[in-house]
Image (cartoon, rainbow, N blue to C red; front, side):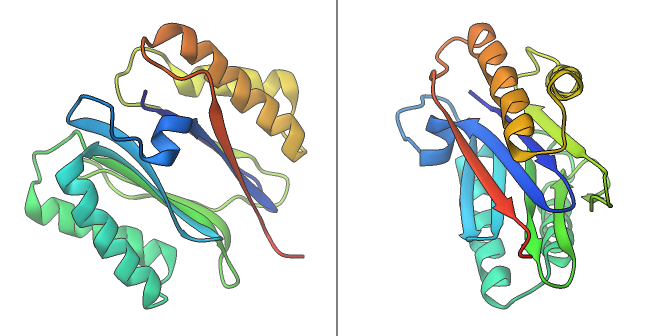
Length: 189
């Protein structure tokens, strides 16, 4: 399974990801997969690609996080590194995000074949992202539909939409676990 979804508002960010991706289970028998890593309680790293690139990328972002580099700079540095290492590689993708005192809630989508996408939700704005590395579903359209139906004002509304997206996907992807992990990062008041 390689579906995850992110919803960001000015005061919180929520992630729903398969339990196997979150826990780093090693029984998946494929070279590409999605990994979730908590850099700090307020900063996350999601990676989709081959294990070898994951280990290198994780080591880099851990070092940058330990040196208190801001999230956008971390994303830019990783983006540059990927482009230098293998500019033709299109099967890599990562998201670095969370909350910081200086910049608030944010997430950055990194792909070596595209420009860095940085997202900072403004007041009353909802930003969202859903990724399916196998492209068997249209997760962005489905997530948008679910958010419109359930609402986006509160954490429970957003989580219902994300969980519904996940349950829809479970039926479309063989080998998917029936359990999702939910991570919520809230902006300090």
